[in-house]
Length: 249
Length: 275
Image (cartoon, rainbow over the protein chains, first blue to last red):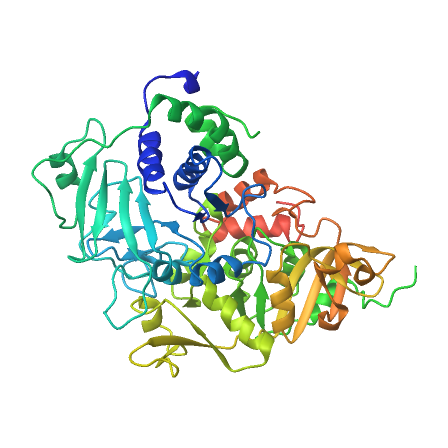
């Protein structure tokens, strides 16, 4: 049985790292196609004793929006959302993300779905956590082919939001707003700083010693694999079945 | 049952969408008029300008594969877990359609401007995105109310010729219940013509029932209705019937090539017996 397995999976390490970034917040929203951030948000809510509000797009049970597709965006612009998650087909060292395609635009040789709300939410939500499980020079590049949403802005632009961290399958980077660069914060169990260097296409600040990403505590892991896994299954049945062997409940 | 609703046959409904029309369609998780899209393809419609509110999925990919589309404006084109729509991706590679890439709130804001009858809407964010570089119709001004520098993006109103969607029910007056899917309300408010397929027509008036009225588009905004039970299959209709995942997967598999799409369309849209 997967759920009784003592070893922690890579997805669970990523969920744990993101969960810690959500502690003490009031309202976290999660976009579509985001099972790992969604799991982290629901776990953070369970650990907060219900103080954290979670709006999970695509869910009927964990989504309180009632004013159509626009409400999330209006809500974000008012400052009612503290954290959100974005990914990218490419992410670069200045935290620019590309959700549009590879090669020259508009005739992209590989076309991704598109920018969704990124070009807007990245500017307005204070703590935007980037996530990308695949950590390779192909995904983490020096410069993205198309900037769906810019990592940083000139001083004269209204920008309460922006990148906070980048969580991958190998490590956690924090974004240094002053230096406009990522800083390697921790490597996941079994991963070295050299492994990260080799797999990363962009430059980042690399401290001499880098700690290991702190895994979830035993009680947190149990909560994740039981109550939270069942909540995740409502929106992400395939992910919950594969990760924990859990059905919706 | 007496009905004041303008209820017509599906073929007549889609005949009200002329070639070259701009057509707003909802995302796959809302109310998609899949049977109407099939009827539109059977009619041989051409040069449509699709507007995904805010994204396009199976409906758009079917129309692109069938050669009905000249341009798409959307924040994304996605089949969700099935990835990027295959006919769309090929049309982009081959330069067969014009893509006006947007971001979700820009589509909503453009429709809101149309809803208010004003020429444009300002919106935060977007600055620094390459989207802006390829959208000459999006302009940046300085906030006229700011003390100093405060650049802000202006988006032109999006006034679709047609809004096309599927809903749960109409009443005898032609009011259409959409529940919590209020992007359908926005589409109906913004469009010149709103064409709706519904599961059924109920012999009552939703507007006299407070619980129903809040989720109802008044007949004022509805141009015509067709009764098409199961009209959102195989995408599904939230709260009514689920997606037919096997059918969706079969489409994605078939539509990897133009030939595969043709075979799929012959069977599923034109109901031809395979040779």
